[in-house]
Image 1 (cartoon, rainbow, N blue to C red):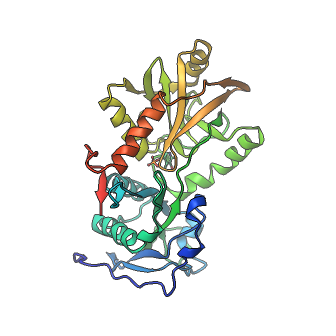
Image 2 (image 1 turned 90 degrees about the horizontal axis):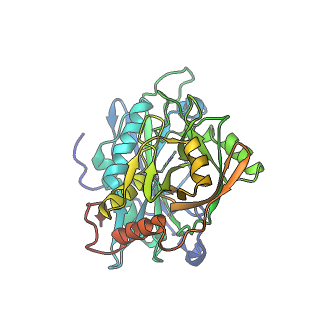
Amino acid sequence: MEMITEIPVKKIARSRIQEVDFENLEFGQHLSDHMLICDYANGQWQQPQILPLSNLSMHPATLALHYGQTVFEGMKAFYMEDGRLNIFRVDKHYERFCLSLERMCMPAPPEEIFREGLIRLVETDKAWAPKQPGAALYLRPFMYASEPKLGVKISEQYRFVIIAGPVPELYARPIRVKVETQYIRAARGGTGFAKCGGNYGAAFLPTKIARAEGYDQVLWTDAAENKFIEESGTMNVMFVVNGTLVTAPLSDSILDGVTRDSLLRIAQDKGIPVEERPVPVEELTFGFLNNAITEIFGAGTAAVVAPISLVGINGLDYTLPAYGKKSIQQILKKELEEIRSKPGRDPYGWNLVI
Ligand SMILES: *Cc1c(COP(=O)(O)O)cnc(C)c1O
């Protein structure tokens, strides 16, 4: 493929931005004016383009609709305190996108298309990036099998798309979670490490059941024995046990969260003891009884940390103490937010400042 020097932009005739109430944003309510599209055909990536956001036209036999070859990413761009825009951890998201695509037998777009596509889309729609601290322009790169063919087969055509939209800071209220031992999210050898569409559709039913039982989310356990905690809904999950930050090690059933990775790194550099090891459900039960567990929280791009206030294990509910500003999760979250927003505060090279 030739080097792309400039991605052409076809501007929308009239912006929809006046429809947005930036003071009262809701996650996912609005998408910005433009999208990036890049097609793969005849074994080659075609010229990426930025176009006005519009419906995608699809043949009814489009392979993705039938056999689920579809992968996405979720990331954010933030205004920094000096007024520049920062896209957070593009490299790490690209790396994960490629691993997900490989698992789904899909070709990866060149890094340049991914990175320059994001930059150009954020520049084009920068008016859509909220200015309030913590709010962000959410970025959703995704790709699907676009070849129209009814047979079960690996698609030979794909479409890579990036859409964007303003999202508020999520002040996550503490959530109640249920340790799930009937349904599973991901098995050894499966697709749990990949951000592929089917993983999410398959999680809806167990989550719906947990909600009917009075919980907000499930804590997934391992598929083989239902003995170890893996993730919380669509977030990684972290525990503070006797002052140590503990989380399950990466495997083919754990999504390699960018937030997980960032928080572990920050914790290590702050001298907080960190352990990546399997977390038995039994350890939780004992830990609640002898007060060894002081915090449990989800980690993900949407909320950074999602505090967990209650865990249901086999019908028994265990409550956690309220989390103050000195809790490990709040200290880590604050540090991550400062790295993203304060110029000159990024010791890891995580910010792509544009
Ligand atoms: C996206 C996702 C996460 C969190 O990843 P981040 O990169 O931190 O947003 C965790 N678990 C699952 C299953 C996910 O889909």
